[in-house]
Length: 296
Image (cartoon, rainbow, N blue to C red; front, side):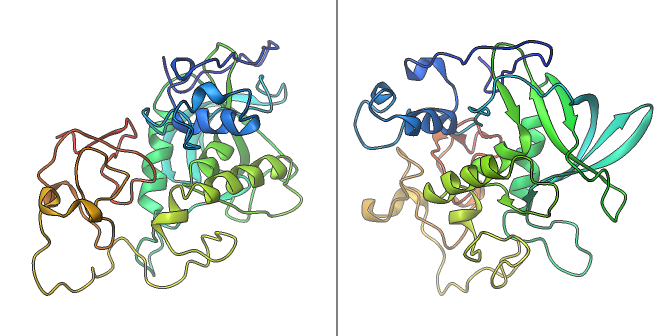
């Protein structure tokens, strides 16, 4: 079952029934459902630790507050992902840049500065999200274009089956983007603000992987956090993950004793392969978000 399923914009769907972890394949989705009513959805947290379905990949969560793509949203064809909050689409035979409304992700293409913390991760996540197929729809708020002549839109994914995904909200709920308001385009500000609260409370994405200001404003990240910034100085080589004492094992990697960040590690620094990964994945071992780290 795909993480992303959605209802056709011409139909009115019913809420998907979630009675067990088998009904979802996204931990973020399960957690969002569980927190709407912990008593009703206690089956999603059988060990009572407050983490719903903690054995499945992080994935993405549908918009639990609606079950249909808005009627005023029009179809579009994805051309490419530029970064975590910008895509290119084909509309009316032309390729158009689209800036996703109400979100902001760290910069990756600023010619005057190195890539910001979590910028590449946000780009990778959006690329993954939009690679799963289905139909893409774009919805206008008030303003048609920004000063760079980019279309300002909400992006929706439709896979059929009763679940719809507002891409803008998905990016924020997973911790790959922060809320960014620029009135008058604020149609879904309350929903996306709630998604940011969820991501922040659970330490997802940039909320644990980066230093942010109090609001997670990705335009005001504190300090030098760029992906190409110099790593911390080490007086001796980092020990392999399996040689680290159990008390130093990061809980994101059960079954493989890998030390927490910093310093940031990649798969070449550890001998473990194909190990289980739970979010927030501080070392970013799970590049395709399938719950398995260092698969190659």
